[in-house]
View 1 (cartoon, one colour):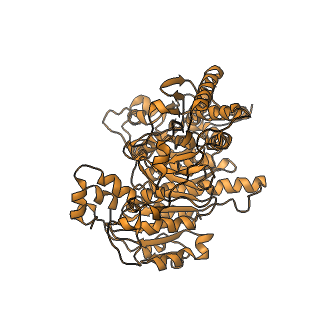
View 2 (tube, rainbow, N blue to C red):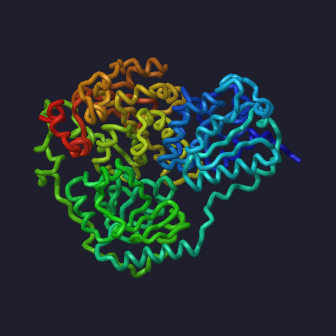
Length: 598
């Protein structure tokens, strides 16, 4: 009987489900089984600067490729370092597999006082207990005879629940052998659909939509997290109803789609969008994530009484719960079940007023919070300008802060643009490693299309466009070095506004705790041994300089990491952010005193 090491079995199984990159940091309790990665054809190792960054990168990879991002750490210090990144993936329902290299089974049994221990009589599994609430399943591997099935089980759970799982692999066990034939049977990653429950929910949804006078569709982010974006788009085409999106769900349905109305963060939206949605008597909400930062502090104009909410594992039709359903197959069933003679009700796609005709709207030029010099780069100007720079296939990665608020407001002028943002968990610094994972995923997606000879194979490689503030960049800047080392080619826009502007507007605008060390970014690429550090860095202090930078052919089709530093005022913020903060009781007077408002 042909056998392979358990370590190789693990990596082969992960590769079979579509994972082509393993991220992480080597350590003395995972080094041996890292060797087996190189026995798997088509699988690569990408080492990170630290474990937290590796977890963030796995998160970004998982969001874009739709398969789990994998992060490998060592026992104790490594697994705890990664925990914040894993928790963010749990919060935002992103597929991540954390493989932890543990001490040997005998060391665990004898409670040997090994380094990385927490006490002098150590429980070697104490750290695994700390991550219990940030995972949906774990495989505590102890026996080669049961380990393959345990590995398979947690991989499947990661796909089904779209949340992190852990695999704890003792170093000595990774060398034990298992039958190679176990790999012949591919994993079944499809959910066990309860047909009667799904049929009941489908019928209830269609009945409610048929009886509504002015229905609409609202697409939220969990649709994408649970790999149901294609089904959602097909359903939109079939129902032919007006379509809205949350700011986190931006881009799931192309914003160039003729049925698309706009994105809104609660009441904060382009002119007419909020009012149009409020007039709908029934809203079909797909993949709802109703947190404060995704609902404009809970101001979304929907209620349980006028909504159908399709959650990952249940459906709520105007207050009545239908359990034991799965989002992706349910949407596919809905697409099949829409009657051939379906005729959408309502007034159709609303005609929205132009911003110039809405002088009371906060985004109107006449409502500017401050007057700035004509050539100064401002948020009012910047985000529309970079939107015009986008092209189909791009992945736009936005850091928690002003970048997320600014990009949420502008319509993407081309289709097939991914919006990648951690708006719910909101861990600053996440975006830089997430952009690393994003670019790895885009590279793999394009390579697969080229191998398959698909029609868009030549132009399949979209760009990673990262927008990160100087404050957040400081937390995870090391991963730019990882990008350079691995030949990746994101375009990194550094918003240099002298610190934590997102924090300044919340509190303490002029206190030094919101300041940072002002780095010389012109030396950044040289520090990381970039092959062309001078030509791939641009510093833009004016609109005309940014226009010139965006016209550079190298940014249109980058072959290396590119950096564009954008100089902005520390008290300039996007209008959506300003309005959210102004809405807090007694805050407007303080904003005026601090200089945010004139």
